[in-house]
Length: 401
Image 1: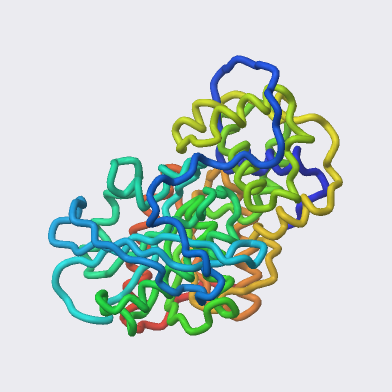
Image 2: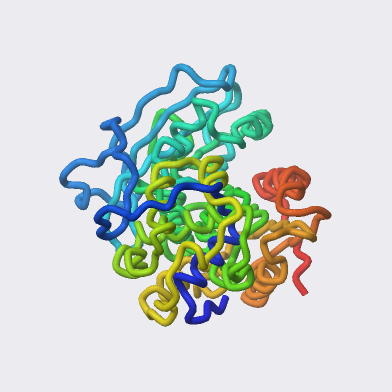
């Protein structure tokens, strides 16, 4: 993925294409702004690590608790707090939700499922949204549980809801799997592992697969399924240009999320117009639907000052979270699907898959009729069958050429 030197503009355009939104809002002169705007703090102490967090290894369990009230009849549900690592290499606390269906026994297949959270508020994270009706994919988990698989659903945007920081999401995903396998009551220490996610969830899934050989080589990952994958948000942003876009809000939210993870690399204070400051304040704690409605129909030129396009630290932050140019290569087999008329560029996804093929990774890439929304379900059904075969030890198919 070649991200040209055009960032806050390019950055947002990319992020814009990833999603975005907003309706009309009053443009008031911003109050004092200084640095990244972080979400309202999580009130639940379970989400915070101990003072000696650095003494724990990635994936070590910091706390656990059962969840008695949940929507999966017969299942046993826990939440685990564990130690992970952020993009600067510093220790952070993270949380995953573990769901084990009734029946079966120890070491059943374990699927780490990364939802497309696309949000900036901590209350939107899966560990909350799975139980309050906020997670759009929650119903689909029943189909996975019906296969007898244990599910790990990590809060893969991390403790600051850094939407767009996909490398962080991959590390949190892998450390969440480590925590689940170290959690003795679950009986999953010897389980084979699969990864799955769509759209924003596919970004964390894709990075988890790519980082695993070096970051978590001990994990027995048998396959990864990723659909509608934005492999180069920067390129996407450039392609969108300065035209109003119905999903502008999501792109803007990506800029905010990346700034949270790379505060010195993406100084939005120097790039935003008064309207941009107003939108940033409005969505700083918002979930997906509110972000989209807040940004719908807006454009780069409204929210960003010209200039800042050649900042090398900003470009580096974008590159760091783009699978198209990330040097890491997944070694586990990949199933990837994409809508033939997807708003997320198909050619970029194919090129990235081709790079994996050239490195010897088996990739089955299916182009499905429809756009980003309509391709999700039919591809997901194929993806689950693909992972079922990997869990069964059947050799992975490939249409690499």
